[in-house]
Length: 337
Image (cartoon, rainbow, N blue to C red; front, side, top):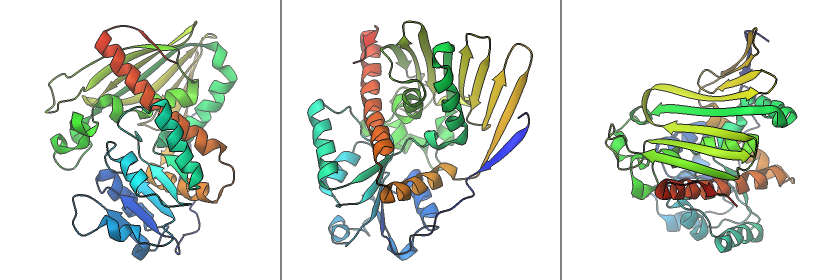
């Protein structure tokens, strides 16, 4: 295993040249989707909508027959309203993350799923880290050793000015009114917690704005999740550090350790005597392309178990974010239903 490299992302699906795709929102993510989508769709059948461009009219887009696929990469504050006002029956969607700016009420949650079922809609959430081959391998290991875990540390350091080619202060990440802030913008990690370890029982959160960036949202967050009576999970998030890191460290009771490094794309397996490494070579735009592939697979699949489960987790992430904000405001431990 030591030094072994596995190349991922070289298999492509048959192009869907007859199908029609709409991409909503042409920020950095939307533009990446547009670039990769040309490999799978006829460019003339890829449509775009951005409120910042007057070339496209929502009324004209609603007249398009057989719009098969829709990618919602607009601001999180606008996704649900756009979805409701632009229902395309039997379409398959990608909802970028987080899928909304606020947690769903129980009533709105029921309405959302009734709308999906009534219109025979399928949805892939934007939580694409689940598609990383190292994450898939780690999940198998965790499933076989969940009761032997002693400690979990998740540490994500990043630097917001490097996320955008243009002025980062004008991005949705930097603006509270647009649903920005490090907790929402790095909610991938919260989704990974649900995916790998299950739902927490309670949490204590503290976040702040260090004033090192020109933003009006939090840029550092530390959360302690109580996963069970015998296990806590420590999560650190920031986007004000130029020293990037994206790691999950799991320490087991049998004196073994696994570290997932999502920047170097490798897994480290350690005991007290040695460490072995399994490396994964991930090509550029891997996540964007895998998301499109998943969207195409979901559209043809009759088994909705996995995408419904993932969608429910994506909605639950919104609830966790709500609880993080509640804990930070009250400065106390909060229980999670």
